[in-house]
Length: 171
Image 1 (tube, rainbow, N blue to C red):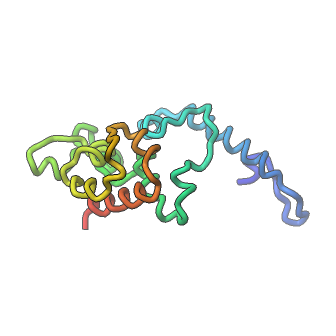
Image 2 (image 1 turned 90 degrees about the vertical axis):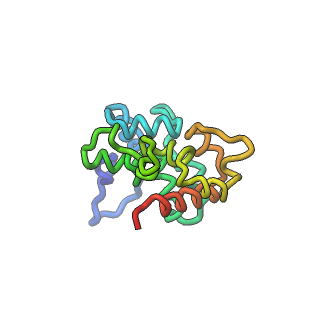
Image 3 (image 1 turned 180 degrees about the vertical axis):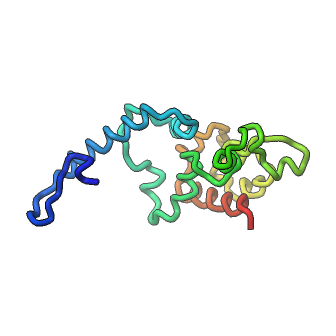
């Protein structure tokens, strides 16, 4: 892996490794890969995070403030589009996008794509959960995913996303 980023390692002859150079080459490599990305997951990530290819790649503030990376998982999954909702799981099964519906809403006679926006802001299944986290939804409620993820208090956001996962996942 180090060789890929410009630092060959000979275990028989220990040497100093220029970590800053490796990081710079790795960031350039990621930018190059992203610039060639064609899929909807990348478009979703850019739309939700507001991150562009010219931006410096660093650990987002919402992750830096959480003590344990186990608390990052559900937030990161929702932000990156690699989550447990039908929008993503239907993609794995090659299901047409219009068929990736919220089963809770479908049972109530409504047809809504089960995506991150619907799950966080609209789905009646999460209404009680939204009420438990008023600091995330009031007083300046937004329906923008980018604003929601950037503005929210990281610990409350992490707890909300974990609870949302537990609420949404099959038992």
